[in-house]
Image (tube, rainbow, N blue to C red; front, side, top):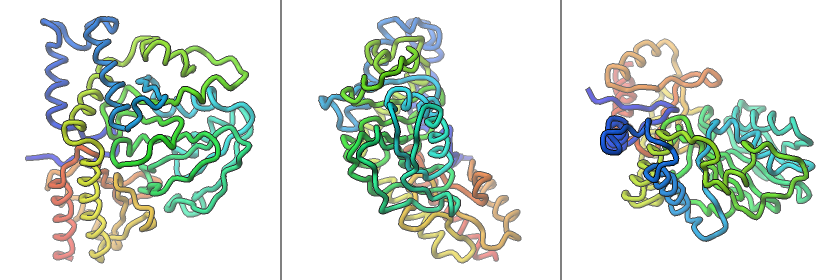
Length: 353
């Protein structure tokens, strides 16, 4: 049976990427496995360079003063690392979900943090709008897509100060003017590769402006100077991310995948809105194209629905405990056909009820 993987992360990956990565583990370089070669070998250095180059190319940031890094520690380490490198006196944060809230908590270790707006009052089911970003703060931090709650920023502000964005769950999924951002970071396991590495894209001219001493492992400039090779990199995660980025480029880039993502989102949200057995969690204008969150209007149907979608080969549909219900994560590599299968199951439930 074909499996339809709606897992929120680690994400579904293209089959051709999984096959190439699997082969590389068995034999990458004349009988040597990818995960046993030296990370200083030319073979892997070339992989790292290609991964970094592809990231900038796909984002349209080549030749614009940006550097791409593949680091360890997940996006959660970036909550701390951003503040280490950027926070001198105070910073502004937009609180739109669990991960944004955790980023705020980490930044507060260092200094004064202001929440310019928050949707915590409604369990993060919407994106705040109409807020002001103080001009005398060091930077503004936002989270583009909120995996748990199924909300997504559709229009980013024109920030008067450097803008930092956590794009962990929708990186490379839609066209944006990425030059509006001074730092972008994203854990690979949501839309780019396996867990184990985090992409960080940094505009170099925003660095070097804090007075504190920064530990080497947390210093962006150190990692830039060493081309992401300051310490042993997560070889497999970087290689698989590189394959995924190449897959996306061959597909036609972000514009091409955005069209597919819009089709998937329209299909699932249409069923949620038209089927009286389901109700969407997020405000309609803020619905995520990556993570559709919804609940049953009649909990008595839960056992039946759960059996149906599992028998259809669907995986990873249960919602996060903060929201309950269901969450269909539709990352780049998830096919439109998989979304059609889910919608068919939802429609069939209505006919049975």
